[in-house]
Amino acid sequence: MYDKKSLKAEEFINDGEILDTLKYADENKDNLALIDKIIDKARLRKGLDHREASVLLACEDSERIAKIYDLAEQIKKDFYGDRIVMFAPLYLSNYCVNGCVYCPYHLKNKHICRKKLTQEEVKSEVIALQDMGHKRLAIEAGEDPVNNPIEYILECIKTIYSINHKNGAIRRVNVNIAATTVENYRKLKDAGIGTYILFQETYNKKSYEELHPTGPKHNYDYHTEAMDRAMQGGIDDVGLGVLFGLELYRYEFAGLLMHAEHLEAVHGVGPHTISVPRIKHADDIDPDSFDNGIDDDTFAKICALIRISVPYTGMIISTRESKAVREKVIRLGVSQISGASCTSVGGYAEPEEEDENTAQFDVSDNRTLDEVVNWLMSLGYIPSFCTACYREGRTGDRFMSLCKSGQIQNCCHPNALMTLKEYLMDYASEDTRKIGEKLIEKELLKIPNEKVRKIAAQHIAEIENGSRDFR
Ligand code: SAM
Image 1 (cartoon, rainbow, N blue to C red):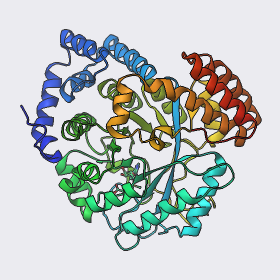
Image 2 (cartoon, rainbow, N blue to C red):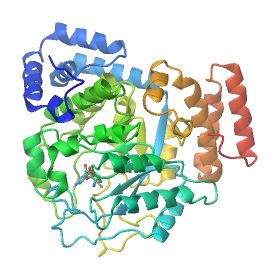
Image 3 (tube, rainbow, N blue to C red):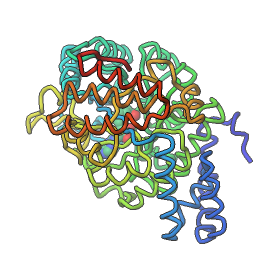
């Protein structure tokens, strides 16, 4: 059908194929024999292609949907266990030259307060985040070659990694900045970033161009090829996402999976993560202007289907979602969540005044990191601050092959427990610590290999006595 390898991203993820996929999905949404066959294929844990997954998304049979949810939950358990990796976004600058109609950073918004962190302010933000217990950050910035050139981003990354405040430095900086050149991606790689994250926003080219009427982001092809350039620049781990609510979700879902297929075909490794942001109320944006928003049930179905379609890819959910929605989708496949996020520039060190208004969008989960960690543990999950894979060079295809072989389970579980222990010792409230200590005791027993179990128990005892950073 397609020569996946030679096509550019925007040629492969094309309107014709997506529309044809949606037609095929519509025609087969009641074809229970085919649906059962696709679910059986997903049970093999080798994923589904965009056509197969789109049929499941169109299916409305409650029995089959329940089966999909059960399978998503099981696959999540098999590949990720009960671990949930924690991170926080760090907003560096809201200067932006683009005209994205859904984002308050858009150039024409005159009442948002424009702000760019100085290196001293970056330092204060990082200290505030470290004081909460964060070890992983995702840096965010608008696109502005004058105010936020790549040199500024690189300087911020250097500052972030250099701050060794109290209990150890930030161990992984993921980067969410606008599409850029191979040369700049190489610089980001050399600066030691973790994942490069870029949301496609929408895969519908016509809508994309209307939603991004001005600025460099208007160029759909350049944006869509960004992950290929990032990989050419040596970045192993890339994170995809669409902003659900801009376009019809079934269209976006097919496009997203096609993008994953493209990366796998061309670079031999799929996306490291997929994010599932939904559009939120924001300054200077008319919330009624987007009528493609999706309800919570559809959102959960999308998360479950991403889980069974790309079983080895991490899934990220932010504080755009409420506690209740997060609880539902974590079960269905989400592996990373942000906690105690602030979407304002400089908002961690100094909560902003009413009239300041630098935030990108309203968050729905306003709990502290301690509350989120406590909540996760009460649901039976293990909050993890682990960054071992990245530090030991297990990125890109090396991470994927380890994950596919099931081996990752053998080191992730003890590592998660050690980093949780550090968190409990250094940052947790008394109640959280009590719950956590019990959880660690119970979870240690689940490490199958006796030698590994003993080493982990020993490290945990050493952390109790003041040692840090085994992972
Ligand atoms: N400037 C970079 C770019 O152009 O990709 C990325 C940084 S931006 C801070 C991160 C993401 O926030 C965007 O990719 C977009 O999907 C999301 N975003 C923008 N407006 C939003 C809104 N009103 N609600 C939820 N998410 C939004």
